[in-house]
Length: 249
Image: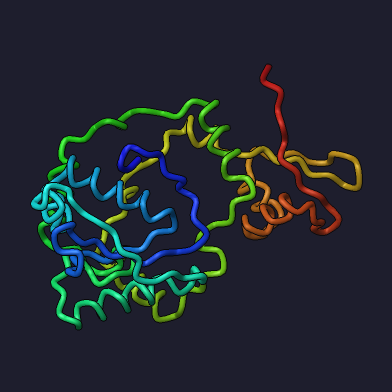
């Protein structure tokens, strides 16, 4: 909500916008991008500055002018794939024109390094935050979350990780200790995780195993070979493998 009116947040285009003060409408102080109605994004900036004035240079600036901030439209983009390029382009272009921006990075949705003041603010805000510790989603909530994802395409679908990026990711992990290091499942948990496997010959159950690993060991193959055939109902040496569903009720 801005200026006492509700805003339709749906918007047909990606928008590159600038923030200026009402007293200096020609002095751009911040450049951003939004997939929603620009006025909705403006109201977010004002709300953020009122509630977290020391968060970063942008919120400090908006607070210093008593929240009298206006928005100008710099560019509109039709192609989602180009948004990072154009955001970076306009930030660098406007800086080159001599404007002193409050942006903490050069665009790209925070892909570049944060400034130290913002990192410190974020660290202090999260200290002692135990709101979700020990909390678990109910089955009803899990089902709702699952239904919301139906038909939605992952934002990473189609993204190809280059060999150079893979190498960087690999190097970044060197020397880091896994969160699961030293953690062991109890025997009870291990048994619960095991899938009992029944083996068919045409339409007759001929064998039964307590786990996939036990089945793979019997047939002298990798666990993945059995798992893949279980998922796709593929034969192996004339046999079909299925997960045994037990009725505990």
